[in-house]
Length: 488
Ligand code: UDP
Image (tube, rainbow, N blue to C red; front, side, top):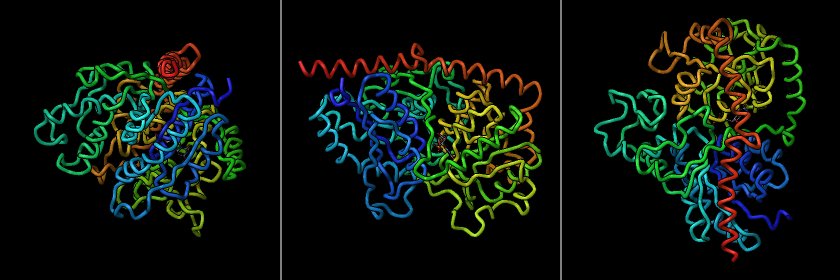
């Protein structure tokens, strides 16, 4: 049947590249495998699209309509507003536009569902008005979703602060979460706006009709498992690992640069290269950047480092695509230690622009991924069977790291040690030693084997008869049946 007559799914994503990437893949699958039409709305936070957005937009396949909604006025929030504050504000400001678009879609084709991300649940009113289900696509692991669904109850039962708790938080079937591994917002005072914002996101997760989560049972066997009423009542469907593997970057002409990178990888021995990336937002301090550079040099291994200009004090990132070293600088690599680029010429590559991460991870020369454990990066590593050095920075990354190490056995965590212990500083010796553990010796062999097994299971989950494809088919069948009964 022509695409216009297909039931339509409207997807709404808040301004986080880490959410938009799996949303694009979900939309692609709805169209390619489930006979739906998809419009994907991106609630932009700034009007100038980032290089990342342009690259993704250029690779969206026919049949998926990607639309960037205009950003709210720049002065709508004080300059001191947090990243999450801006994300939530952009998502909320988008609701009237989402309503107009949803109404106009519904007038030409049956609207099957609205799918929102964790920050855009306020748009569920639009779904309610049009009488269609509102689902969430949760782009972080089940462990975080489970924490969200349990949080109101944990909050009500807690005296004092999470950071002072003597025992870990135990969620059914998940690795215990020790206080230092909790998301930063839970370590803030419970009376703070930061915590209030987090609790409100968590409560929103219980306000939708169902949740798709970007995971699969072999990595999170407890996915969907309840414990409290709120959790038990929520239909949860594991549809992952959805990652974006289509070639990107036609709009920004990085192809020659990327082709050179792959040619360079072709010349490296199998499993020899260390790849380092801290996601779309993660930055290190200047001191930590220097320490990491010296560590890489000391390993003597070939490397590709998707680096960013260091952040002076904190490790938090610039989510909206402004965190890269500027091309207009006299010396864009000037933040690296004196002589580093010369000494590592031929051995290592430092990239300042958006790296073709999935293509790099898919290359047989890559033997280890030093990652901030953002969930997309973790899934991309798993899908390619690449063991990880876990260097979590913010959000739920410390929980992800604990799970990948203790439960899946495909990562080794770095310990903050040496001078500066306590502020998360990781010394050179520790970096070198953990990279060696992941790449050489018996422990490395075991980890590689586990990573290979997990890759095979992940690949199977996504096959036509795999658990994730079947889970998505079940949900889409439900969506479609409600549109046809409306027509009767
Ligand atoms: N990414 C990329 N090139 C880069 C940096 C990031 O392609 O130079 C992609 C990466 O492959 C992943 C996403 O951006 O799909 C980052 O998502 P993740 O959840 O790992 O981290 P976040 O950016 O949300 O912290």
